[in-house]
Image (tube, rainbow, N blue to C red; front, side):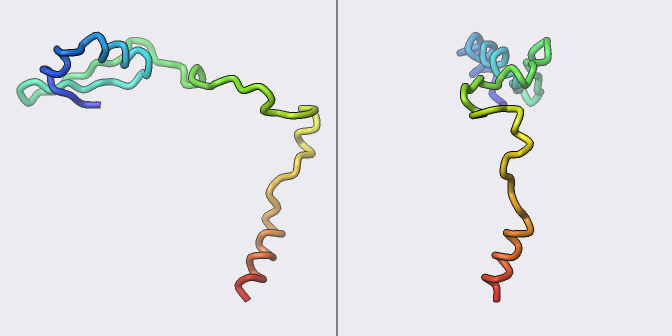
Amino acid sequence: MAMSATKLRADIYRVIEGVIKSGVPVEIELRGKKVRIVPAEQRDKLANLVKRSGVIVGDSGRIDQARTFDGAKWRRKWDKRLK
């Protein structure tokens, strides 16, 4: 994200909070020169994951038996449609 120094001055606390929360650096331009505000520590990308209950329904030990995409069956159907 890029912004002018004037805009940064108007809402510096919001900009800094945004950098801290998102981990995305902000680029500031003043008289043709650019600087960046970046978080000091790298943010863990996995921290953004949301825990969702019930994603695996049933016995998780049987997940290897779950039905998956059958490419050969799809290809036969597709070829039949093309004829």
